[in-house]
Image (tube, rainbow, N blue to C red):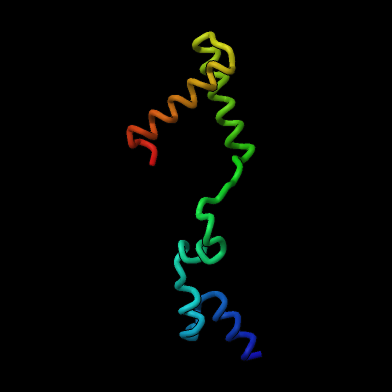
Length: 91
């Protein structure tokens, strides 16, 4: 029972961690990613459904506001995003 309580305290950070476990926990995120995938540092990940929904909503609003088709409105959204990135407002 005492051993169980010690394990619970240790897992929730209440007790003192042994130095070996502490060293393992102090690995930076960059080191962790490099160890998993050292050759390809860029992670290819697709956009979420929510992100796509938000962008589509912006495209529809611009298309309606400017009386353009969806393809043209999409190019406006992409262009605006690129300009924001270049201006330093989006990092």
